Image (cartoon, rainbow, N blue to C red; front, side, top):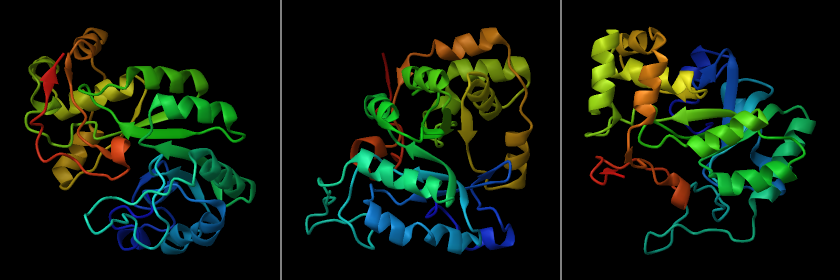
Length: 260
């Protein structure tokens, strides 16, 4: 996302790509809210200016919620509650994003933090179809129905928090994942990434150390039987409530993890 970590600093050293890049692709996003056409036209070049590019390869709406317009990406009232803008709809924002594709300012457009209930009708109404849907996904939140829809429609499901965002307890400490890691001589993190890739998602993760970056890149295929074992995990938990409120925020620990 354009307002993601270090989108102006480190990216200058990596020009022309942002720090959120894949195969040389530059990704930007509308900050945490739906945006009407007039505001989008005014702000859409800001990510390009910060990244030093003339267009972005992928432009994402950050959530399917509309916030009160202004410079504050999380507008709140005196009580600390988010101020929503009920006059802006998701399809209105999508039409504005489609215009950016028409004008050559972005090559593809997509959505973040959206459920199938909102994605399916938007897909049917869209002239330019979503290229990417970015959502939280890991064995405790596999998003199976959404993934199947994306596969059928040729949409890339980009999984964020594929390692469970370090939640304790969490997917990294799951007994099934740990057992597969021992059997395959992999780390639990490598097992989770292999599971995500082999089931057909793209995975989005970050590394704070060089050793962790090597671990992330040095993954190998795991047996189909192992994939099925992970698929049978019954624990279900959402670690980020952004899809419910539009406001991003991982829970500090997975205290609400439960088994179905």
